[in-house]
Amino acid sequence: MHQMIENLMNNDVEVVEHLSKAKAKWEDIFKDITTVSVADLAKRLTTAQSWFEVNCGGRDDGKEIMAWTGFAVIYDTGAGYDRPNRSMHEAVKLAQAFVASSVSIEVKGGAHKAALSYHINYENKTYSAD
Image (cartoon, rainbow, N blue to C red; front, side, top):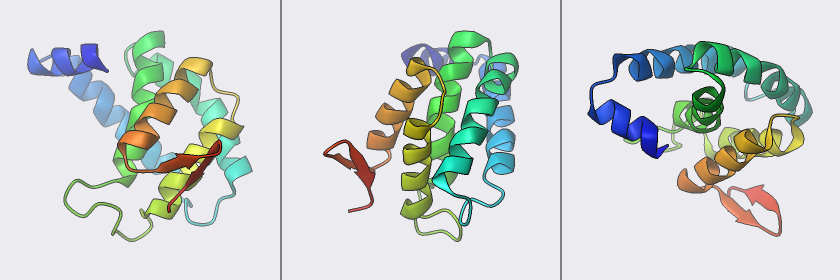
């Protein structure tokens, strides 16, 4: 994440393009976020990892972008989780799906850090909204 922020500060247009592509991909993954099960979302994440690696800057950058942008699409810095179909419930579901998925350990680790950063509670190896 540090390298990505540095690249953004240096006006790296490719990073902006990668983040924009990631947002569009997440909108597709989240098309039924309120009703999809954690297990089915986990399958989507597993399949999507290669897409992020190909379309978002390569293997390392793609993993990092995947891990962080899913939560960024759900959370709004102005409204927080107070949005239709983008509540804390969906963010918790995403965190749980990352754990249940077969994405790489790097993506899982990044997703864990992102979940904590986006105010998702983690106690006793469980994510929750409380």
